[in-house]
Length: 107
Image (cartoon, rainbow, N blue to C red; front, side, top):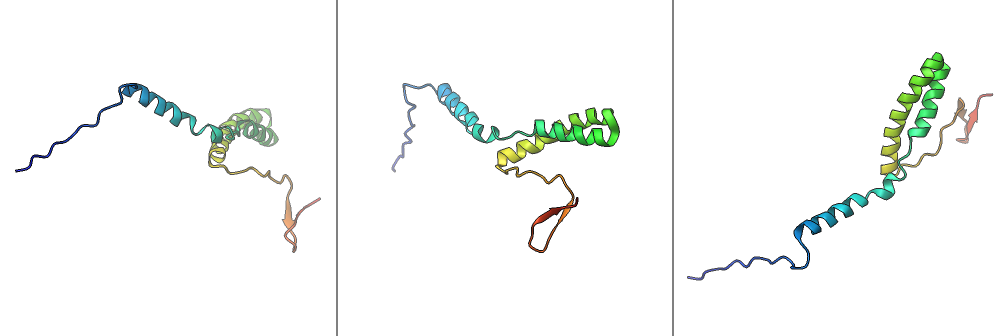
């Protein structure tokens, strides 16, 4: 009867296991840095929120709108930045698209 032997793989003598895990953890932590650098929406969200809140409800609405806008703008900006969705700007006028698919503002 043949007896099969299992040969255990030897760890390299130069590097301890904890150091290998630490290096792997640092590399995985540094991996998303280029994407998160584009995740900025807090400032724009606070500006737009305070503008709209001030326009609708006065100074108190401006303060509340700034806080809410910073939270929501930060969340949306982070998601858009991490996913790489570009911000092309929004139109700040009401208007329509003509027959040639050009946007025209009402004056």
